Image (tube, rainbow over all chains, first blue to last red):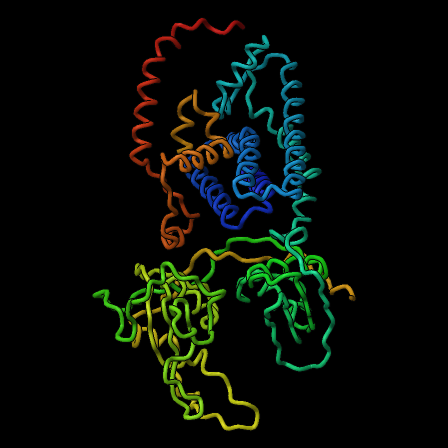
Length: 442
Length: 86
């Protein structure tokens, strides 16, 4: 029973943390979440052997006393980021209202306790802030009471306040910059019943985003910039039903801005609601393969000044850079690749190891963490990979490449670049789909 | 850190989640602290959440020393204060 109380108290902390961090930038939100998770874990370890009843009270007190600072922190961060939008203020208002509700319930309960007759205090008298409680009750002319005696009322008050005021808000919350964020000027979403297996989703110049025969899951992946394994839950039709989408912005936004606009479209037309969680999943660590720390023969440091170059809009297979431009961030066909003759390979220019790790994700279907310890920018040439090769020939023409002979990325990396992928487990941010509906007709 | 603070009666209020992490964030913004998350493989191996590790900067050391000196000067005055009436 007591361990249930501790878990309940920890859940209250997590729910409150989710509420006051909702709508914040993911990095900020995740930092706070990770801090709180670490704190809860360490606190319970330190207090192992203590009375769990007092432990639950202690956790709840640390939560309640910190509420004004949580709200202050939220407003400070919003102000710093320049995102004190109407939505933020509205959320802050709701959060503040909920906090006042908690405080009111707390005060009512404390007042009820002060009117009780004096009684012996046992067990959990040494709970957190006992000295402060003692001072308060002494000033009121009463004897001190155990905080443990207040737990049922306090827990009920907290749960009532959280349940009535906050949980509906939490359930309704959308990921950052969904409705209320940047939006397309016009958008059309229509079911595609062609049965074709090919699909395209292309951000085009002129503010357009065109998708043909795409699944809703593919739209979500693009909108949030996440691979499929980092998206969880949701109805089956997300991966089965196909749609044609044409969206147009009123200017020429960047690809990242189009992603944000697509989030808004998904929230509006597909009623998409989702939240992020960090889960412990299998990952790969990109490390140096050789024990002496030397890199491979086909990997070398970049000569161009990539630290001051404009990064590419997104990583992945892209066209060769224009003449005269520093080739920073390029990943594509190696110089001398001849599609008709059927020979060539891949190359990258001016990539950090962290960026290389990102480009490997779709090949290995896991999150890849750069653990090489190599800083700076690198160039390389290497063979086509079994996981990703040259584009297929046009229909009707023979394929000049011997694709079955392509080596796996797990072979090419150590042999040609002196790097390798170590399988491990690690924290991975996952987008969990809470709700989605078939899109409303245009 | 919360445990150390919680051991001193006068500082227990500082261990509230919001208060503690807001204060740490401010101290870091002021350049008195530096923080970094530990290597994610360590907590993954030990099956626990990752820790954010804080260190005092040189400016932080100086500020801490000044705070200790100030607290030392104020201590006799606090002891001479009359008890709060019941």
